[in-house]
Image (tube, rainbow, N blue to C red):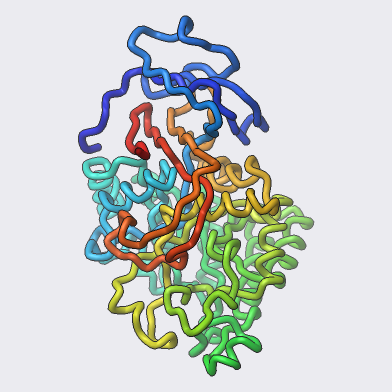
Length: 435
């Protein structure tokens, strides 16, 4: 890691402590020492801490496990003009994300152990947060030949995915799920049938028709998800749907859960906070893949997070140059930056009464850690001291110029949020402080 502040002990005192791993939400103190959680209870006090401890009064603030973002694009190797580990980690720290799971669709693709090793070494040298790579599911992400799961997992890959590409060959996916079962690996799949997507650029429906744009039907997602879950039933492999967006998919996922299948799923914060109407007059910064859906879909997705049907909220951070976003909607590249706005957009759902805070933190921290087998996502004693302090009541306005990513393609331009991270701690070191 680059030069950071010292790792002297820190006492976060008088905070509202939210730790979904212990089903805890109450007033307390958190003592951090030697890079780990030393103690979590009420009334630790200045007398009960090591000499030289930095005592931080967190009255009115929230202390929670650092967030784990399960889907973010970082441009190293090969595409560093869009994002580097250094810039992504600065953005992540600002947004309370202490671990980024980076996607394999780099140049070259992360499909061999040497590239996994490069990513991990480069991240260690330049990033201020933890970075863990997903490896490609198929060689070159071409959807034809599986990668070496065993070697890649041994090298440090935490899961296997072809990024925003779907594996259309059912036999390849069946084989991948079989190997995933044998290696106890997690398959993370983008569920979109490219033939049904076709030339579509936004959600199929009345709004697309009014704008004169080609639509993408819910069936593009539902058909691929249905196929995948039948293959999970056939193989017993561990499977995670990367980004669900519609009611149809939730119904399919519920049936799979009821049948006892080992399946989990994510939703992007964009699909929880926005709907197709926000596109307005062809706002290309809201062109996403998969596309924003209806308000009914958005509400159903939020309810699925609340019930636990959907496991994870991720940023789907996808930086794109302004030149490829400020184009006619149909020609613009899909994607949005999201590392700095994931939590604030989630806090909006909490303030609106749509989600409980503990549920939000569970979906952004505890569940990703559990699914990926990572040690974070918890404030249990002995756990790594990846911790965030949130001021839930600070009002602020998103200014793209202030974002740490070199790309400024945020769908929340000039959005008014209430609540932001004021301190981010990684491995016991303060890597970000809002002043």
